[in-house]
Length: 185
Image (cartoon, rainbow, N blue to C red; front, side, top):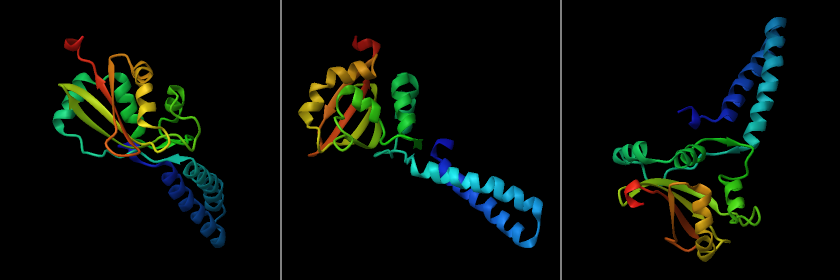
């Protein structure tokens, strides 16, 4: 739950309240409250503004996750799948885009302007295996370029991950990270 709270908004709210209290205390001649309000309020307010400028909002789920899939996730998900899901569904600070470094290392982000944009995720089941599907808007990187990188993507997000790449619509890419079951080996 705390992952869904914007630290920038908290900083702006608390900083604004303390700063206003400081100004009111100054106007009424309350030196102690004035000092505390302004000395704590202004830096917290400025910190909130700085965080707001560097804030990256959480990626939404395109389809709500069913209880059956949550059970499957709890039993099968790899640490990489769990980390990815948690990272993209919380507020991030100081990054330009979700998975920007990962896409660059894989070779799917030649420039910031051409980088595919993660727009949503969903959790599903593929042949009794937990699957995390990342949905990208990819107008500059073609479906064939994604397919050429499939082996590299599997190695990057592995072990125990099989990758399936689909193109449901023009400029849309679905990257499925499928848990490899022990029975499938």
